[in-house]
Amino acid sequence: MENQHNFDHSGVPCGILHIGVGNFHRAHQAFFINQLLSDPDQADWGICGVCLLPSDKNTFHNLTAQGLRYTLTVCGRDGQDEVHEVNSIKQLLWAVEQPEAVLDKIADPAIKIITLTITEGGYNLDKSTQSFIWDNDAVEHDLQRPSAPKTVFGFIAEGLRRRRANQAGGITILSCDNLQHNGEAAKQAFTTFIAEQDENLSTWVSDNVTFPNSMVDRITPTTTAQDVERLNKKSGVADKAPVYCEDFIQWVVEDNFIAGRPALERVGVEFTDNVEPFENMKLSLLNASHTLLSYPSMLKGYRKVDEAMQDDDVRAFIKKFMDEDITPHVPAPQGTDLEEYKQTLLERFGNKSVSDQVSRLCGDGLSKFPVYIVPNLKKMIAAGQDLTRVAILIAAYRHYLACLKDDSGSTYEINEPWLTQQDLDLIQNEDPLAFLAIPPFKHLNLTDNSEFSTLYTNYVDRIKREGMRNVLANQSTSY
Image: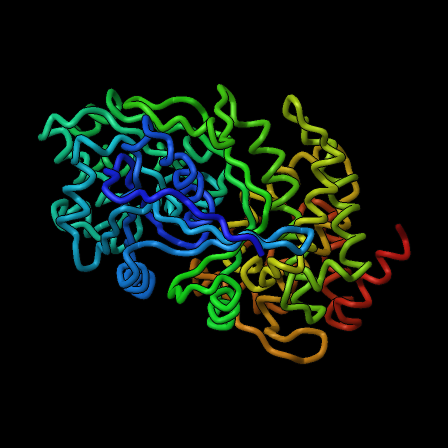
């Protein structure tokens, strides 16, 4: 294990405010900034982190207790680890206890960029229509009480209102979440909310706020209590909030910053006029393949991704999906070898040192399917392609949600924060076609597609009767 010693960043001011200080942010954006801050002319780009949710309490207190520094263990595919001390987060606020401090920080002229990792579902956009969802108690509260916000939309709106009053100048809001056209999604969500709340502010935002698209990539598992002990033993540091991740990292950003930006190209970030080819490649191959392996792997009894990737049937299932189902719809970005990219993905998924949790990949499927699977499924249907693997995936997703037991009878917990009672009724309906009316699929009219509905209902029955292991084994032998 190699320890990476970094420059002392004490006294660095904050030029970036980041909402959503989870493991991914700390392994990705904060890591890039940490590398950059050692350049004297980039010393104004420290991060002010904002923990927005009550569930962020432990993160806030653990990081605060150790001066906001933490260790990041980068796990190589060759088995070699590097440990970095990251101290690019120079201030940390918890909105639950410090709402006024958060609002004033957004209005601070020194802050030039607001970055976001609030998850795919955090933008409060309808999964099918991409329209803003108004039927939300917290959103309604923020419309009625702008000065005492609860949601990210309310905090941003009130902070920008104060920024306008302070004459603090323009600002960039940069989404770092796994959404297609994530800058456009952020713009849709925030400008729609602001227009409803404050028409005058809406006009100011249109002239003073930019929303670049970006693509981010680095596998960063949840850190368990066992991981904390393991990582600290390796690093020799008593860290209450360590993070670990794979050795691959990528960040591609549309160069559209109204108030300036850090020179992140110096540390490997790629700036471009068009993020879409990179975004399409990553969402269609990495994220879609993660979703494809997640539910079948969970049902087969796997709980770690690297263990599932040692299963020849799972690996063949994913490779066939990448090569035959998705590659026809993924033009390679300039300078990218698509075959090499796919091979690297298989290696990354199988990285034993990262050992990502299958349960993490299964979480919030309602938000992931519309982003990772549905866009290419539409293209596959239009092109008359074989729908077998997607049919297996959706049948596995139904079984995962409905049965809560894997092939061996072991139970698992699901994490689906957006499920409604109506969704639950459709999941438990004895007619498997009813499941196709849940939000990710209802606008696809899959029940009218005889090829898909036949495949899907067949696999629903086979998974129930034979188990996921036999279904994938039979697929593997046909490859």
